[in-house]
Image 1 (spheres, rainbow, N blue to C red):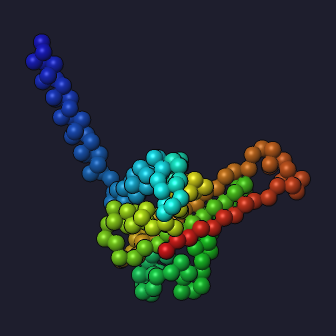
Image 2 (tube, one colour):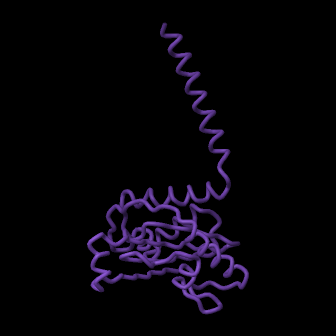
Image 3 (tube, rainbow, N blue to C red):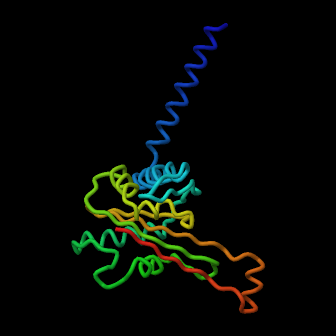
Length: 192
C-alpha cells in the first residue's frame, strides 16, 4: 500500500513539474520581462528596505501598466537612437510630458503621482534592478507607496522605468467637485 502511495505521489509530482515547465515555456519574452521586473521589485517592497539613510516600510506590490511601459520604451528608444542619457528628451519633453502623451491620464483622479528611473549600461534585469535599489534616489521611487503601477522599457544599453499612482475620488469628493470644492494633487519624482 505504501509503495503505491509513493509511486502515485512521484507520478503526480512529475506531472505537476511538466505542467509548470510547459506553462513557463508558453510565456512570451515580454511576459517574462514583465514578470521578472515585478517579482524583483515587489520582493523588496513586500519586506521594506533602507534607501540610503531613510528606511521605507513595506509597500503594496506594484502592478504592470502597459501605458507606462509604452512611455518608458519610447524614451529608451529615443535615448538609444540619439545617444544621450537624460530625463529630458532631445525635443525638450519631460518624463511627465511623455507619460501623459502615452495616455497615462490624470483626469478623473484625486491624486496623480509619476516618477521615472533611468539607467545605462546594465546587461540584465537583475543588474539594473540591483543598481536602482543601491542608488538612494532610484530606491526612493521603487519604494514609494504612492506609486501603484510600473512600466519598463529597454533599448540597447538604455533602461527606463516609469511609475504611476492614481487614486480615485471618493463619492463625497465627487459631490464636492460638482460644487467646486475638491482639487487634485499631482506629484512628480525622477532619478538618474
